[in-house]
Image 1 (cartoon, rainbow, N blue to C red):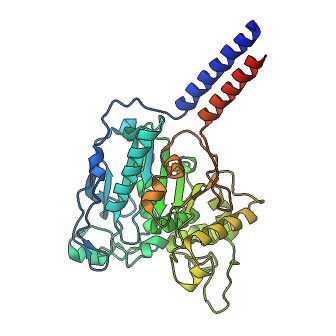
Image 2: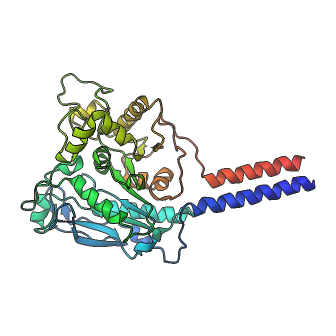
Image 3: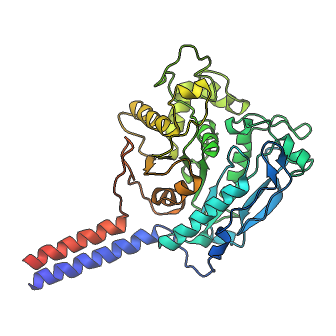
Length: 408
């Protein structure tokens, strides 16, 4: 019995040590700053205009600082508007989340959605500190917004939705050769500067819908750097995808340019991707893409059509179906499973809902939790699956050992 008691004590000591190490690995910072007032999330920010006619400005958003003229390194003299987390000390930031806008260019909405999810994660998980995570929501405007009043003569602009596929800017003035992906490079450089953010470990480019389309295609063409391991992508419910192979699950012989950018890699890549295509070729681009830390997420109830062009329909007829087909494709080219540094989450019962995706257990974990959680929240065929964090497994093991020893 003494031996049994000693083993119990040792097992519990092991659990306590492992649990301590588990949370230490999360670089958790003591919560010595107040959490935001939850009432700030009760009302969605109202846009000052609309996407069709242009936006006249940027509404106030709780917990956000509005920067109207963020300077770009890639285009000296040009700027973009953005929201960024307010009242946080840069030296305490361990993670940053860059959230692109949706098709409606509504970066205020996406900051609000992401900050709301961060608040919930901080209330739910011990290893998430609200004040240690910075959120940035850049604006990628078009000429209508400038006319309506949302920008000035330094604001970088893009025609239509060309920013989603990395094409060049249309102004202002001579700034007509700046890719929207150059802009992301600048935003990453801002956060990855150790002089400004000495304790930052990870930057997550987190897109939903059009933002996921943007992030996925950027991941394929992103210029390599020493910081690759510090960058992750969270891609939720994209309306269409850059397909990595030339074939399609729903081929259509009457549809032209099925494998042309932005749907494929045969030709038509934007100027930003010229170097990658010339130096790596298609196979090299795919290999580099699959080497990134990419977290895919689809809502199992997202049966909307998304991109309705025929090129997109060859990938599947709904967001969810395209997700299933895309996952099967990357498994086929990766030895039967998704790459080791990728995860696929099927969020049960959620439709095309940015809030539902970010505030799901899977969403909050991929976006905000600094510990390394690679357990899948659903199997690769879209069925839901149970999940528990590492410390739960340790506690379960310790309890099982105690029970066994008691029998002795």
